[in-house]
Amino acid sequence: MPNLFRWLLPRKKTPSNAQRVDVLSGSPAVFTPFSGDAYESDIYRAAVDAIARNAAKLKPSHVVTSAAQRKPGDATLNRILQVRPNPYMSTYDLLYKLVTHYYLYNNAFAYLEKDASGNLAAIWPLRPLSMEYVTDPTGTLYARFTFYGGQSVTLPFADVFAVRRHFNDNDLLGDPNTAILPTLDLAHTQSEGLTNAIRANATIRGILKYNQVLSPDKLKAEKEAFINDYLTITNSGGIAAIDSKADYIPLEMKPYSIDDGQLTAVKQKIYDYLGISEKVVNSTYTEDEWAAFYESVIEPLAVQFALELTDKLFTPREQAFGNSIILESNRLQFASNATKTNILKELMPLGLFTINQALEILNLPTVEDGDRRLQTLNVVDASKANQYQLGGNAG
Image (tube, rainbow, N blue to C red; front, side, top):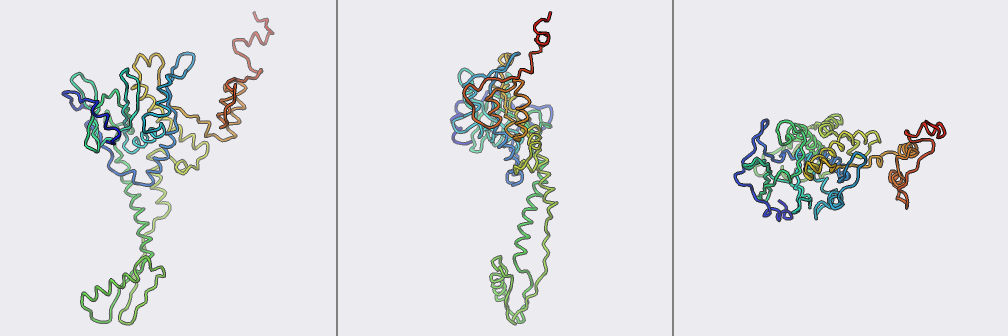
């Protein structure tokens, strides 16, 4: 456990007579990080990074929703959610780390530290060596974390942010990433094969036949000298000069080369597993491709994170009064200028945007008195349509 989190440990007491949770399906509710070193694969890491850095741009907000409108919630809570979830991380850092854990281990955890009044004080992402769910005699659920330094802490599940991916086999945890292991091994083999092929093509291979009898030690020394002089990658000319005491018989080697189709197929399997396209990874996507990525990858993450935070930060009564956490992003910021212009042209006359909202869509600074809504006189309130058409004489 990082040193900066150690101060949390003495403040948490392990419940007495805690027992491991029995689940109805799957293995016991014990989490251990995926050991397949998926993050060591450059393809897998680049794809996870593309998802994490885009998801980290989401804006968590506390809102209060009523039948009439949605209003901003507590300002202190929003500052923690949107700016500084703990003294050592920004909200971008927190979301990036949690999303990365989510895709590497299919489980992501964070400790929701609360003050004496039960209000959120900080959010601490957790990277445990292992975790197991336990209960006390009253049936209260806890999460017991063990960290790399050997420390362990048991936290009430009500204070633990927990999201799961591939949530199928176990009742409380996401399944491990074993399904992608063969593809990751193949990608590693391809990378090693390319390296070995380059090395093989850069050196001489053959049989050195001496025309005289040499002692084993002398023969070995001559071979080593020949290798050091000619069979290294530094021999850029690719030519060996020998006299009549020996004959060099080259061996024709045809190293196996991997065609582009095979490389692309393996890469695509990894991208498909993560639900992402190569154009998103290398940032060459079109507007429609970005929209597909947002709806299929970013938006489900936003929903999952929002539901978990809402449940862990508000009581059922508070939720009944409209308190919730949402994660949102201005998707129009990623639209083309033509699309932005058409949207504003069609919707601003209906009074759906304020002046400042329109400027924000265009990535322009706001102006004073820009919170006004402009509306064309060609549209009228539906409840007053008859009066308007009859010149105020509607009966």
